[in-house]
Length: 323
Length: 244
Image (cartoon, rainbow over all chains, first blue to last red; front, side, top):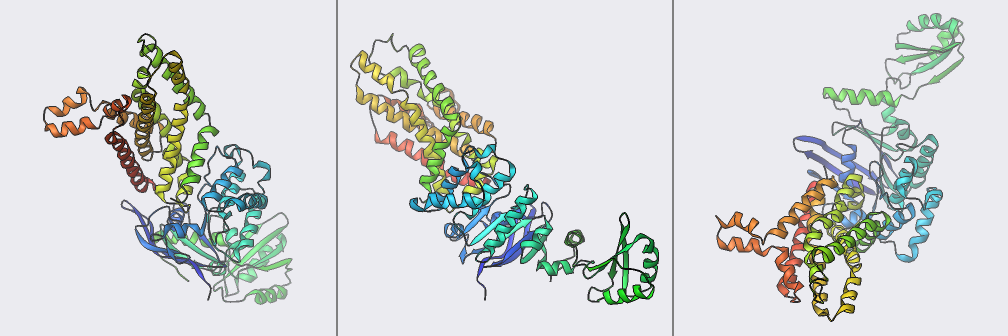
């Protein structure tokens, strides 16, 4: 049985009459990366602020490495590394001084401190700006200083609020690689808007909307909710499009056909009635019968952004989906 | 109080990492000079003491101390670093004390800049140095009192201007509470005992007796308990306000 490092039960936060977070429960085990998704204002950051002990929940319990954060806040906070939203840092300090300060507060003793800070600066690639005030750094570097600060004490729990926001594609890739590298012996909770991030780094995903959980499961389960799950896309030359559409429409397994036209070719996506049905052989046979050439064929995994949109929009009409 | 020392150190250094320290110290020393020599008539009195120097401290602190304290918490709130600080494994009390002591030590540093006046008066005559030492102590305690007010007020707002103006007003009330203009408001309807209590909150009265060289335990307790009271309120203000 995997060790549960973060356990949240029935977390609720009200600001006046507004319920920002409504009865959220989740758990993260060692070795897991939980992706926390949801539209802006859904309550992701508020939840993270409570889990890290910054805000006090209206109700619910939070256990961090076995410590209830409302009972033993200092012990609980010691095992968390936290990147708050927007990666705040003391602007007049240099990354070197800032990291040394955090290391000192975190109780890394004098002898180990300098080498630990150097190691992190090296790992996060901050060497070039280590002696420059944080205020003068680019957004990408500021974010990296925030991440460096979070992993400085090698915490067993990492909570990162939009770790790749504002980074360029190379930097995003680097941070994801770093998260994956650390994932094995930590419990990691990241919030993000970027769905490809969920596919590439997360082992579990939770979607919240209007303060409540509307999906909880693996990224694969999430993508299987897509109407495109197990759909197939054919690439055919433009002259064959009409004929292809006509002959495939007659297959009763196919619910809908979508086209994306490019210069010489068209991508024809076939959506089956049920994602359980395997239609590729059927389609191949049909195409061969009518002598239509398939230039390319691939099976869709499902499109996360489409699932995300449909889930978060459905939620407005009050429907709750769990898997 | 784990975490107190690193927080204190960081805060203290931050004054010198920005122009705040230098601007403040220069203005503090210039104003001290102006008050002592021009308004206080340091030379004309023909007395070897620092009376005219210390006499203006309550009024000087009234608007200079809020200028130091206004950033203590409102800046943390505005920049979002408060979230960072309060998720570190440190108690809120340690953070509040750490930042307060840093600001206090900084005012002591500014005050140390006035030591040449002390040396001058020794050069010119034979002042009672114990009275001067007591006055310095009183001045430092009073600065602490003003700072604790300012620190608490700055935890209530993200806006440093509001923090400054509000602290200034509260400091003014504490300065004036021994004066007829404040006491008369109460004297007409409140029992004498309440008027006495209000009068006893005057920084001027407590500072005045220390400044005369009388170090009365009651005055020290007054300032110490005042500081503790406002810092306690400071902790509560952060607890209540951090989510906004």
